[in-house]
Picture (cartoon, rainbow, N blue to C red):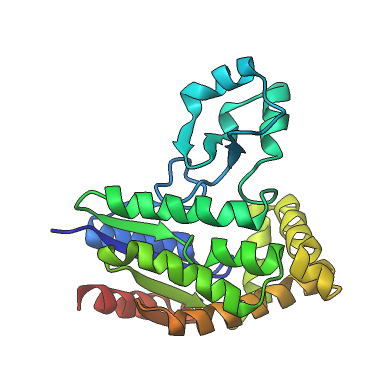
Length: 260
């Protein structure tokens, strides 16, 4: 048996986590949710500190060393293992949110390549990270055109091609309704944070987006772009339209896709 990878994609509150759990049970695969703390293909809440970053003293480098993963040009460190002034310094090099794209892109592609090269002969199941995370960076944060997003995600697919990746995409027709239904569980603080992220990144600022409606507008465009990109990727995929309407039917379609 060779390594196999299933990835569940879709907008927030579309049911990705429960669907990924379902696929893991069906396949006996290793499940990695977003922000799980030990994701093999994503750096999550981590910083990339270049070898020549001047802010860090020799003593601070010594403290970082046991936590560091050495990669070309620097080290990555999990920010949740740091505190105080060292945390504040490292936070300025957070891979998502602060790192410039020219530095971030090779760091993240290197992580994907390392995962594919070192994957054991297991089934892996990811909640997002192939479309969602790259689109949040290339589209929402940097306001890059769709072509640049496609090029980056295609490079990721090339890195993981030996694992024959397959994507299950949960398409939302009622995006605002799905988000509102989840607010009692996730909380108003979560809602304020995602509105701020989507409206005050490069994409939102360029279009004058604001508030809940601006957030939904950004999600609608992100889904449109993701589905267009998915159609162009050299990987197997299935699109589940509005799975919340009938989860039993959605899972039957997913099961057939996986066991075919």
